[in-house]
Length: 292
Ligand code: NDP
Image (tube, rainbow, N blue to C red):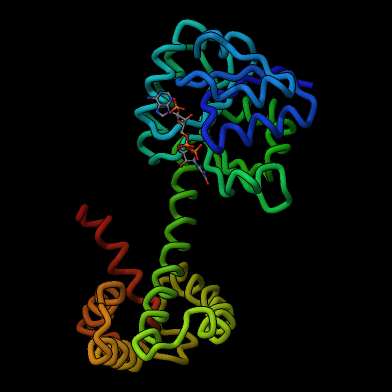
């Protein structure tokens, strides 16, 4: 059993602390606003008087606060006790924020792991919870068994920004899926069709289309968007144009799909009508290469 401190007792911090308590660990907690540790204390958690005291109480501290401004404030206030300890920061942020925080904590003598939680609080400790980690490999190796009690622990590498990069990329995929759902549902809603009824068609269709993605990934990795093309860009541009024309005719907003049609047209203008639509990836990637 380990001594673990949890900093931040919002919805997620509460779930993390409760799970560790359930597993029999010795838990110390701290939250900026007092009064949030009552339920955890009743289950045996110790409440520290400050963030510095919480860090001092354990070899490993798991911090999960709102954002990196909050995380920075905690690190500043706990700076005197961080040396020689492990800080696992599960606060959501950007790769750049994670890298800056890794440098700052290294400067304070702590080993740093950054993490991205791919779960909601009720999922913590359950079979579908996944937490991505990056940063100090020795710290991950030493505590992987404990961290796995929160959910599957996937270590992505020594660059502290990698967990956040993957976390935000996974969420990007999710929001793209949600955007398609909202557009499609608004289109049928224009004729009074209920979202729940329509989803009986939409859900299986979207699941079937997931099967296209490994093929796109292969084309992206090979850089060849002209192989195994069954639905070419020229045809799909006409189809998407049709969708957006119908969307306007039905009085529905085109905002969610306009950028995609714009990318299709840009790629088409480069003479890529016979290629797959995966070719638009080159335009999205090019913004980074061009620094745009
Ligand atoms: P909550 O809003 O429930 O809690 C926020 C926590 O941050 C509170 O403990 C709050 O303390 C603390 N906090 C805010 N500002 C400061 C500050 N300046 N100094 C110290 N502490 C501060 O958020 P969640 O617990 O839901 O989320 C925490 C993190 O987990 C976020 O980064 C979120 O993106 C991530 N996450 C959350 C998920 C979820 O479904 N909830 C899923 C995956 C990741 P106080 O009580 O004093 O306000």
